[in-house]
Length: 432
Image 1 (cartoon, one colour):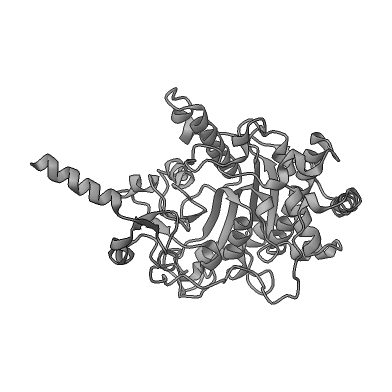
Image 2 (spheres, helix red, strand yellow):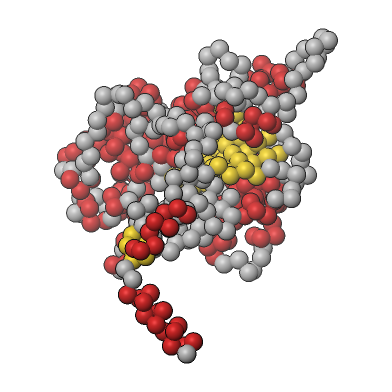
C-alpha cells in the first residue's frame, strides 16, 4: 500500500510544471510552489551592508565617451594595421620584456610534494607558492597587517598567506567575493587568532573605509588577488587607492605607518597604537599589493585606471576597446580548437580547472588568415602590456614603486603576470 502511495505521489510530482526562478533563471522551481520559494531563495536581494556604496569604485560615468563596439572580425586589414602601428608607437620607450621570477615558499612545501594532488591542483599550488615567494621578497608578508583578497573565491590565497604568517601577530584577512562560494577554506581558521571576514559584495560597490574590521583594527592593508579578472583589477585598484590614498597633501604610505609608531617619541604625547582603530571615512594606509593579472579582454574603459596614461599617448576609448579585444590573441595560439566542444565552456568547471574563458576574439578563424598565430600572440601580449602600463602609471602617481613579472611559466598558466606595488624608496628614506 505504501509503495502504491509513493508511486502516486511521484506521478503527481512529475506532472507539476517547473519554471525558471524569476530571481535567478539558472535554477527552476515548481510553479505552484513559487511564492514559498521566493521567500527563501538564495538569490533574493539581501539588505545592503554598511560598506556598500553604489558605484563608488566604478570610475566616472559622466564623460562623453561613448564607444562603438566593433569586433575584430568586422575590421579590415588596413584598420588592423593602423591599430598595430598605434600600439607600437604607444609602447615606444616602455619596457615590454618582463623578467621571469618564479619563486616558491616554504608554507607550501608539503602540498607541493604530496603525490595525492593532481596536475590541476599542483598548478594552482605552484602559482600560490610563487605569489607568496614574490611577496616575501618585497617584505609584504608582515605582522600587524590586514590582507584583502579581491576575487577571493574559496579563499585559498589568504589561506596560504595565513599559513606563512602563523607565527606573526595581529594578522587579519578580508575576503571579497561577489558570489556565494562553496567549499570555502577560510572555515578552517575559525578558531585561529586571525580574523577571516567575508564580504559578499562586488568590488565596484565596496567602500573599505566603512568595513567594520578595518575600522576596529586600524591596520595597514595589503591587497592580493590570484587571477583577478579584467576590470576587477581596476576596480580593486580604485577600491584601495581612489578614496584612501593621495599623492598630494597626505603623508606617503610608508611614512604614515611609521609616524603612527614613532611620532612624538621624545614628547609627553603618546603615539597612536596601530590597533586603536579609525573613524568611518578616515583614509586607510595601503602598504602594498600583489595581484596576478588575467583576462584583459574583459577590461572596461569606464573602470580602467590608466585613462590619463592612454590620453598622454594620443589614445582614447576607441583604441582601448580595440586593444582590449586584441589582447585575447596572447593566449589563442595555446588553445585547442579541433573539437566543436572546445569553444564551449563547461557548465561544471571548478576552481581547479581553467579559471577563465576565452574571448571569441581569440578564435583563429576571426581574422580569415590575415595574420599568423605567432604574430597574433605577439600583438596580444603587447596589448596586455600597454593596458598594464596604464595601471603602473596610476600606481606610480599614488607614490608606489611598481613591477610586472612572470611569476610562473606558461605551461602552468597562460595568464602568468604578477603586478606588485610597494611604497617608493624615496618615501622609505623620508620616513627613516
